[in-house]
Image 1: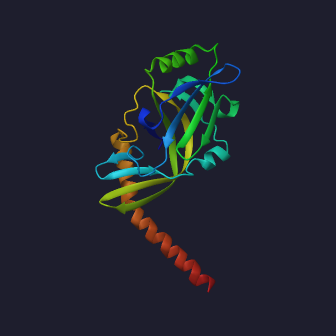
Image 2: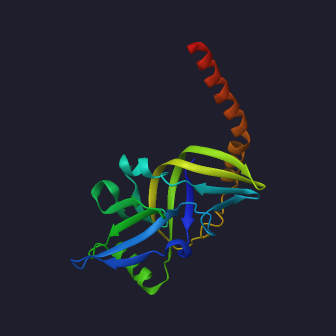
Image 3: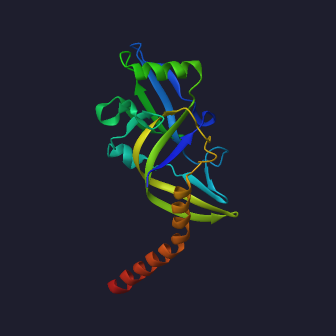
Length: 203
């Protein structure tokens, strides 16, 4: 299941900057790591939050996941691509950062750039599939930790429905995550049993 998360302007307003050669570059953070500060976790449902661990994007960047830069997750609004070098990804202490080189001959780029300059377009988002997830119960919350992901797309969005505060998940997405949460204790028990069996076999 592909999931979407938005990052609102409070965490990193998407902006246009300029390189030394005068070329415009769209820059933003598609995801932020959990720091304990407000706005760095996502509310998935009642009593359920999601937090992204630092390092969650390292493998995707290292392995060169061919993510696309899209406006509003729309494949018809392609702004860049990792494999072509027109979208560049990096991770720092804040989160997943993207840079899109603006093509002055591309009408889609010019439309997005104009919206950013006016201040109409301020949020970012990313689409992903979780590869490594752990769950933790703490202070009355069920916490879903993302530790590794498959990255599909990044880019600016019109509606940052939450500034890392609420995801606005569809019912089927929420049901799948709730099932994952309920299945986690049984999975942990099974893993412990397997490790114990391997240890006994080694002895």
